[in-house]
Every structure is written in structure tokens, then in C-alpha cells.
Length: 147
Image (cartoon, rainbow, N blue to C red; front, side):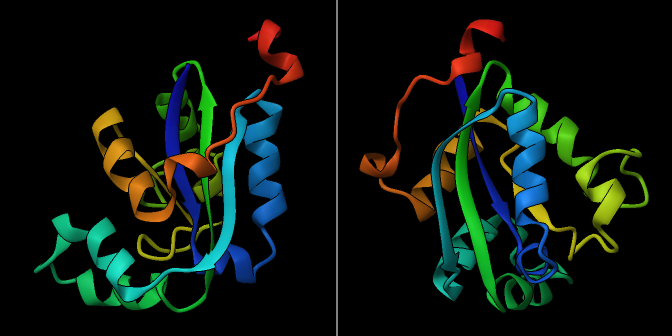
């Protein structure tokens, strides 16, 4: 099984889309192994987006993601990194496919509702910003035999 880090940005929380987004993951057989509602600190945001420091959108992005509560989670399934990225759609909502989270609900690249790790290496780096290993719960999901 593979794991990935996902967080729902403040506009997803404010717009009441948390349940809808989680439902889309669960309906695909993706197991949530860690979940929390929190207010991302500036330090966490800067660490998460350190690769974008110096880019024109960096300050607006940091202000946005620290401007309200987020929902952070770790999810698990076979090929989950690829699957989650498919479910959420392209970073640019105008390029995101119909039926994807961003294609259905997002309006701009910065305020695109959701972030997901794009590689195993980034998962390893990103989840540690928000979770300790003892917060990850391993359990049997009834649909595991069907995936």
C-alpha cells in the first residue's frame, strides 16, 4: 500500500466542501489513516512551499493557506499518489477535467481547494510538517479485499 499527504485549503473548508471531497476519496476505496482540522502556521506554510520561495505568487499563497482552517490528512491505497492526483485534477482549474475536484469547484490556481503530494519523496517531506508517526492509524478497511 502507498500513502500520500492531502490537505484541503481554507476555501474548501469555508465553502463546506470537506465532506464532498472526502466522500470522493472514500468512494474510490482510499483509506484515511490520519485526519485533523487545524490552522496552518506561517512556519508550516513556508516549509511546505519552500520550493516556491521567491516566485511572484509565493506571498499570496502563504497568506491564503494560513488565512483559515485546513483539513490535513494522510490517505492510503494502491497507487494512491497517482489516483489522488487524478481525482483532484490539474493545478489550474481551467485545465482540470470535468468531474475532478478542481474542475468542479475551484476558480483559480492559488485558491484551487486542495493540495496533494506529487511523489513518494514529497509525501515523506510534507506529512511530517503536520503529523507525527504516532498519529497515523493502521486499520482494516472492509473494501481492501476489493481493491
